[in-house]
Length: 387
Ligand code: MG
Image (cartoon, rainbow, N blue to C red; front, side):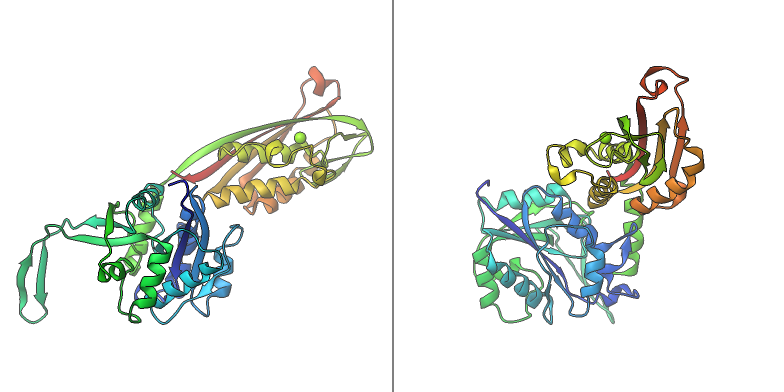
């Protein structure tokens, strides 16, 4: 599978009127995040997905930009056609600029697709031209009409519900779309079936459902409530004093008898906060993301590091619950600046000030902080992450 290059086309061009929401359903919030953003992140966070091509409605560009803020590496969105089939075709044609070997096609309104399902569809493409995620039918099926009621029980034996992603060799599905009469297909696999090409089935899980009606959004909220886990991270940093007249702490310029020595602005407080967030999401540390050997960060404001950590958290579908920072030094006095510092950090992290705690203590004259040789900062970050 290693020689395969996978792209994904995410179809989000519909109006979603059946959900009866104020805006197209793919931009409605689920668990505090636009539905489409959640779907895109499922693929952006998969290690084997390369290009991500989203197909949107012709009046949705602003909504799309809001919904995808901070997600890097997406191809520019393309506008969909008059039905799903035409929208998929538009997405496939956009990929011709740099054709992948294989493409997954996914409904924008299925945000709960698992990494395992995406991987299983990819793996099935080693031995098939097409492969789709599907669920065996569990309920007894009746054919009925509104007037006379049940006409017959339909055997559910060998019946499956087609879901997405549906994966294909790129050339094969593009050719099938070119040959198919416009608008007749409700999924992509049926086009290969019509050409007599074998399509493999990959058993999916029921959580990968398509949000169609208002009640689906209620169900999605219930699912998400149990799907987040709490994590904490610890960040510790030390910077030494050197001759100067002010220190930078939490982005604030505080007059002092010395300055802090360091490659960036030496904001020991923000360094501890950034490392605490990296720690909570298991994403290395500040030195890995911003190597001191790189001259680009000389004198940089440390808010850059905190904002980077925040964006990495958000990109994982997480959110920040709380930051608790402790500064250890004999001087300068932190108390008079505490509220301004909280405000500044809250602004960087885009959370309410009530989620930021800043404390200060001395070490009673003991150790390097007691000898006034530098400042020690410790931060604990608490975050919510998809389990
Ligand atoms: Mg540092």
